[in-house]
Figure 1 (spheres, rainbow, N blue to C red):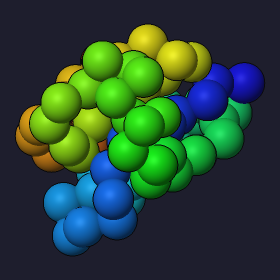
Figure 2 (cartoon, rainbow, N blue to C red):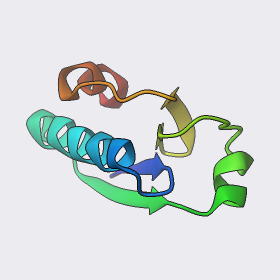
Figure 3 (cartoon, helix red, strand yellow):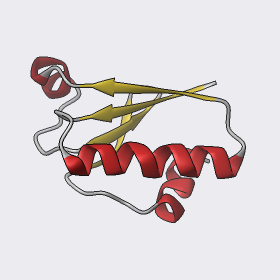
Figure 4 (cartoon, helix red, strand yellow):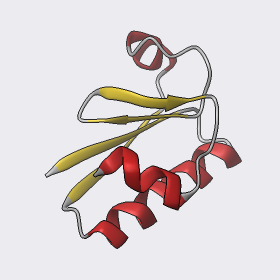
Length: 77
């Protein structure tokens, strides 16, 4: 099971990234848990300075932008 973490404060872009990531994981048939990380100290702990960001199993894959579900499939596979 993959842990998909959305790093951000809950802004519209963060919600869009969460939606796109969930859609990509479902299309790939991946078993996953979606976790929203909203604590700024925890986000900084990932080394992220721009949100939203996406981490998979603790590794940051993208920060500061909202990739499409299609683009996210490559990051999740």
